[in-house]
Every structure is written in structure tokens, then in C-alpha cells.
Image (cartoon, rainbow, N blue to C red; front, top):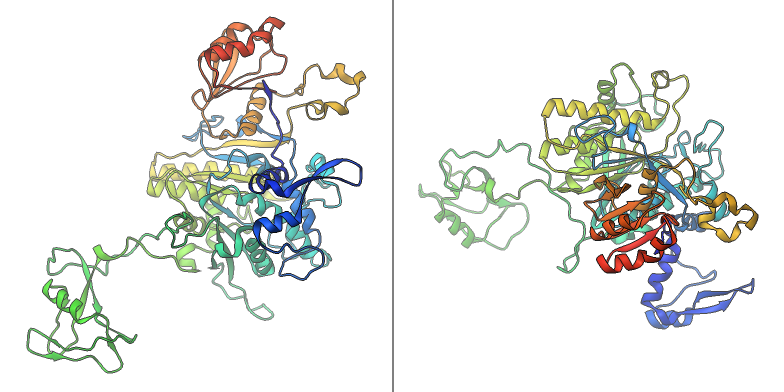
Length: 630
């Protein structure tokens, strides 16, 4: 049986494997400064293979960089040995029942960089839309503290570092000489990891203001590719004028939109394609003459743009109509004759200009989104505050700077379809979850969300803290409960109102599991079991699912097989038994169920005979099953 890795993927190693598969002749071996034999890239061979100049050294080139950028890239690629642990008591069932874990939605408490690394194998290429509202770097906002002074190995062991209040956030003051650097170091590795979550037709929306808009666009151009830029949306954040403003009263923010792959004219490339927005007002269309083609509205048959057609039209009353001065026919003469024959022309009285019927049936089924989101279309900050106040009437002003549900709902309309996954790894007050539920209730679709939020502590003097909301996660989770209850009461829609709650924690495995060579022989007595004493079988199951790339939203059942507890995940796709003293009867019955994966604890067999016969049992009953141990 193979041993599970039980750590996040090493992206640098994965990139090397991709390079080896594409250019095997460009990979060679050299002796490094420490006298060790290592893999290296033969630059000359690579240049021959790709027929392109390779730039190195101080040669000038177009690039976007900042202090610590190299460390930021390493930070994104380095693996971690952490895991997710299910918080059943905080979870909410699909129907809104507390403590149930049958929802397909995910809420994760913890550092989003760690979360993205833990989820990358499982959700690689599975997320249709990402929306994030990161800290804006205004000089007062807090950003994640990723310590680039440490080595990568030190960071992997210490990435849970906190300040004296237990927060992973630091205030990024404008007086800090690293003002832009710290913000870029924070956002870059998270976006670099996030890109791989997107489906080939996926899209990411990022809210930002003027302070880092320029830098964010350059980062996105680098990570997603400048060709995959879709739009920069201007959102009307406020509608009131601040007369105290020194220069201009700011009333907008931006939303940058990038595709994983931008659709082009080739039928072979399937990339992002925006949805049309629903037509909310068709009152302009009517059918007073009972036209068999249905409702229509009158449109001019002339236009400002020059067109070569030049002809006259004779109305039924005998009036001859000429092209008006400084205007042009919008249709060719043959098209007009066809429309006359089909009764698609409205003649009007006297010498008035005829009009064309524009049929509702011929209009595309929706409206093309525009890059200006006014408050009537997408809500504003005032609306966002009112929404939270209605959900938390006992705590006015519970959360600052949240986005309105309507704004996120518009992005969901544009970017998602049936059964799509929406990811928000700066979830704050959980507006995204609220919007997903609202949209599902309105259009009957089955979108799912994954939210990640650092459990940042609330201010000790705040009303939220006094009411028992100790962290931002507490507020977000309660918001989902209350919003779901409200939507259910108003719509009675059959949708998923719940979420499975997880928290990021240290690995379930003792250090010897990862580095047995570093453990002295005298200390081995303490490692008879490589699983930490405070971890449950359910904890082990979640880490196994992450390692094997099985969705956290999968159905999980427990079965009794020959007196042992066995987890069945995704209708028997994975069968996992973490009990000790596993007998041959248990192994045989599991093998006969023919799972894709079968996982056991190392040294869990009841005796040497069972261990010796293990492989033969599976070869006999289910040779295709992948067997793993931890």
C-alpha cells in the first residue's frame, strides 16, 4: 500500500514536472554549491526547443516588480502540512437545521493562503466564479501578515503566527515604507493560487479602490494574462456628496474582471462567456394589431451612420417618402420591400416617416452588461448597511464596509450557471453566501459557495463582541443562518440554506510522519502511533479527502463492517477505516465493495497474517482499488 502525502501540493515541483514532460531534453543534472546532485534547466537547449530568446541577468525588459516579489512567488508554491477539521456544532444543514452536515456549501475559518493551498488538489479547475473584496490599503486597513523575513520552511511551520491579540493582521499605515510592497506581497500569492481553481470558462471579480487599482491590474495581467482582461467595472458606491472633501468627493469603486481563458473566434477554444442580464421591463412591447409574430415596438428606419442605400418608399396613401437630409436608410431596399410584404412596417398618417416593427421575439434574450453599475442596478454602501441592520436589528452597524447583496447577485447573474461553484476567500460578513442563496431562490438554480475568512477578533468594546460574536467568522456564520431563514420564509424555495463549517488546524499527523529521519531512535517510543492523540477518525477522514482530491461537500456515511467503523464517501468511492485491530473479514468485505480508494491506518491490521494477506485479498476481489495508508 502507498502512503498518503498528507500535505498540500508542492507547486514548484508540479511546475518542474510539467516542464520535464514538455521539454525533457532541457532538463539536466549539476552539482550545486553544497556538492549535491540536483536537477537544472539547460538554458541553451530550452532556447532551441522554444525558438525564443531567454532573458537573464540585468537585461532590460518590460516587467512589473516590487521588493520581495520573488519571496511572494515562493510563498505561493511552498507546501504546508496543515489540515481542515470539521466543526459540526457550527455547521448548518441543507434545510437550516443546526449541527447537520448535509449541505454542499463550505465555510472555512482560517488564513486564506493556507485554505487555498489545502483546497487546490480538490477544487483544481472546478470553480466557475471567484469574487473577492480584499483589504483596500487605504492607510487604515489591515492586511494579512505574511512574514517574508523567514525562510520558506520556517514559514510553513509558523504560518499561524498572530499578534498579541491573536490576529494574523497588521495595520498597513501610509507611513510604512513598505506600504505598497506589503499589500502586493499579500495579494500576489493568493491570486496566483486562485487562478488554478477556475474552470476553463471561469471568471474572477475583484473589488478595489483607487489606492491599489493600478497595481492590482498589473498583478492580474501577469497572473491571468493581459489578453484575459474582460472589463473594469465602475460601481457607484455612494450617491451623497461629501462637501468636506478636499478635492473631489469619491463616489465609486472598481471591480476588475479577468477570465481564466478568454473566448476567441476559434471553435476549439472554450473560454469565459458572460451571461446576458434578464430584461426587467418589456412594457415597451405590445401587439395592438394582433401581429402573429407577437409583441413589437416601433423603431426608426433611418440612422445617423452613412449607408449606401438610396431609394424612395411609396406609402399606401400614395405619399412618396425620400431619405431625410443628414440621415440614411438603416435597411437595404430589398430588406424594406420584404418588411412591407410581411406587414412589418408602420406607415403612420400623412407624410410622416414610416417605422419598422422590432419584435420582442427577435430581440436577444437579455441585455449585455455594461461597465457602469449604478446604485439602482447594483445597490450601494447605504443599502449594504441597511441589509445587515435588518438581519441584526439588535446590533446596528455590526459590520463596516460590507457590499450589498444586489452587487454580488449581479456578478453571479453574469458569471455563473446551474450547479456552479462560487469562491470568496475574503468573505467578511458573508455577503457572497447571502447572494448565492438569494439568486438560487429566485431562479431555481443550484449554485454552491466556498467561503474563507480569517477568525479576526472583534473589538472588545464593540456591541458585536458584547453580544457574543468574538470573531468576524462568528458574524459571517450567523449572517448566513439569519439570511437563509429570511429567504426561506419569503420564498419557501427548495434550496440549500446550510454550510459545512471547517477550521484550519495543524496536521493530524505527528512530525515523525513527515520527517522520520529527523527523529532520534531514543524518541521513537513516543511515536508508536503516528496520529496525534487529540484527533478523531472524522479528522483523519477530512485530511484524507483533501489529499485524494475528494470534494468536501461529498456525502459521508458510516458503516459497521465486521465490527469496525468504516466511512463511505461519495457513495462508496472512498472507503476508509481508521480503527485498530482490523481483521481479514473486514478487509475482505471492504474489498468486495470495490471502492475506487481504500484507506487504512498504518500498522492497523490485527496480526501479521492479515497484513501479509492484505494485498492478495484486494487482488482477488478488487484489483483496481487504489490502496493507501496513513
